[in-house]
Length: 371
Image (cartoon, rainbow, N blue to C red; front, side, top):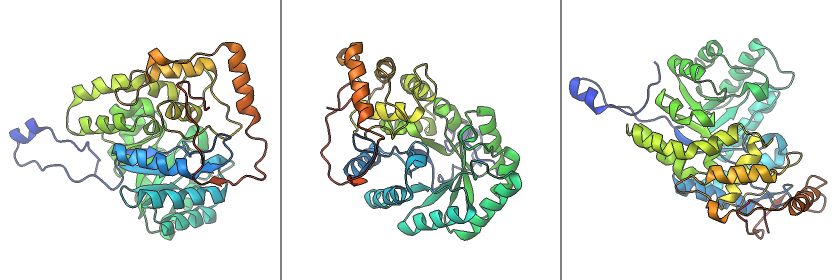
C-alpha cells in the first residue's frame, strides 16, 4: 500500500464520515536525529561525557529516534571498537526513551551481518545498512547482500541510499524488490530528489528523508519522517516542524521553515568549502552543545564560513545565535587559530585514551572555537 501523510484533513472526514482516522506511525518516524559523534578538542578521542550530554539534549528536545555512527556520525572515520562503544554508550544513555538505530554497514556480507547482530544484542531497535561500497557489486550482488542480512537478523533494517557517497543507487525498481524481503521496511533516501522520494513513497514501506533542504516537502509528500543531521543543531525546531505538518498546520510549518532554511541550505551546499559534517559540528558547538571538531583530514571551517554560518543560525527561534554578539577575528588571529587547531589533531593517538570519561569541557565562543 502507498504510504500517505499521517495527518488527516478534518474537512474530508466531515464530507465522508466513512473514512478512517490515521493509523499509528511506524516505529521509526518523525525526527530521527543522525547524531554527530562527540570528540575531545583534538578530534582524536571519543568523549563519553559529551556523548551522553548530547544524547540527553536531543531526547529532551523531543526527537523521535536517534541514529548512531551514520554519515553525520563520521562512521568512516571510526574504528570498529569506537563504533561498538558508541553503540553501547548510546543505547545505555537513551535507556529505552526513543528508538535507537545503529548504522552497521560493511563491505562484506559476513561483516554486515556480524555488525548488525552485535548492535541488536546491545539493544538497538533497528539497523541501517548501506549497499556494499567501494568496488562493490552490481544489483545482483546488492540483492544477495540484503537478502542474507534480512534472513540473519530479527530487527527492522533501514536501507541507506546515498549514491553520491556509496557509488550505488537503490532505484525505485530495486527498492520494490528489497522491501518484499522480511525485516526490510524502511529506506533513508538522501538523493535530494523530491520526484524520486515520491516514487519511493508510492511503492510502499516507510521512507525516511535524508536531504535537509527538502524536509517539509518530503513529509508533506508522505515520508514517515527524517533521518536528519541538522537535528544536532536545531532539535526543537525540527520537532516543531514535524508537529505542525502532521497536525495540518501548514502555514505555521512554512513560517517556521523559513527560519530554519538558511542553515539547512548552508549545510547542504555552501561557497566556503565547508563539508556537511564540519558545518553541522561547528553549528552544534555554536549553539551551545559541545561536541568537538571533526576528525582529520576534515578541516575546521574558515573565518568566512563561520561568519556566514553564524548569520544563517541567527534566524532560528530556539537555537539561534545572536548576531549582535558575533566574534570576528582579524586574519592574523585567524591564521594562528587555524594552525593551532590543525597542529593538535590528526598526528597520532599514542598515549591518549580513545574514550575520555568525564573530561573537562572547554567553553565555546560564539564563533565556534574552544577556549
